[in-house]
Image (cartoon, rainbow, N blue to C red; front, side, top):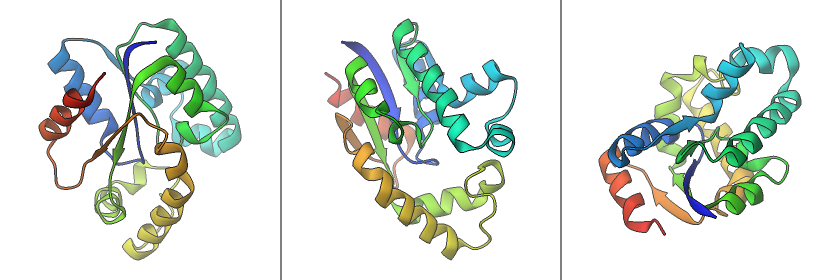
Length: 174
C-alpha cells in the first residue's frame, strides 16, 4: 500500500474541490474519476447514463477505477458518489490506499448544495422540489453509507470551508 489519498462521499460533498485544493497544498497531482471518464470516453456522464444506462456506466467506471489505481500515477483521486457502492469497489480502493477519506455531509446540507446544481446531475435532474430531493438523498444515503463508512478516515464537512476540511484530513493521514 502507498500514501494514495482517495476521496469518497455523496455527490455534492466536495470531493472534487477538496482534491484540487489538497493537491495544490501538497504539491502533488490528482485526478477526478468522473472527469477522466468523460475525457476518455468523449461523452459526458449524463449522456452515458441516457444512452447506455447506469449498469453500463458502472462497468466503465470500474474499468477506469482499476486502471487508475494500478497505474500509481496519481497521489489523490476523487471518485464519483456511487463508485464505492458497486461491485467490490470499496474493497479494491482500500486495498490500494491506507488513506480513503469519506467526506460526510448531512442530508440537509447536501439538499441545499445540490438543488442549485441539479440540472448537471443526471440522477437528480428530474426532481422538482427541495422536499423530494431531500427525501431522495436520505434514501440514497441510507443505501450508500454502509459503503462510505468502510473508509479509513471520516471527515464531517457541514459548515466547514475547504481549508478546515483539508487540515482535518492532513491531521489524520497515516
